[in-house]
View 1 (cartoon, rainbow, N blue to C red):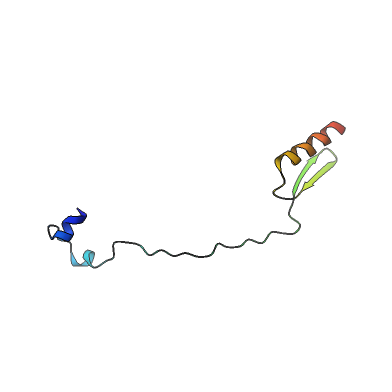
View 2 (cartoon, rainbow, N blue to C red):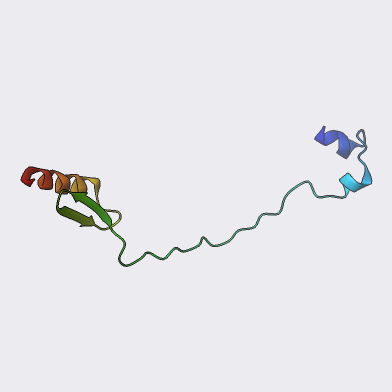
Length: 72
């Protein structure tokens, strides 16, 4: 069908034929989100609060929770 138009076998209305067959691509820089300096992960187990920075390794977080559970 695409070639039919180019070969003259498919006639399109002028309003359609004059419109580009593609969309413009707009590229913008990603929005930089500011990290809050006081942002942290907080887990409360009983009377104990565990605070760790976002992105803390899963193993470190798991180890801290296990350590708290052994003393409570």
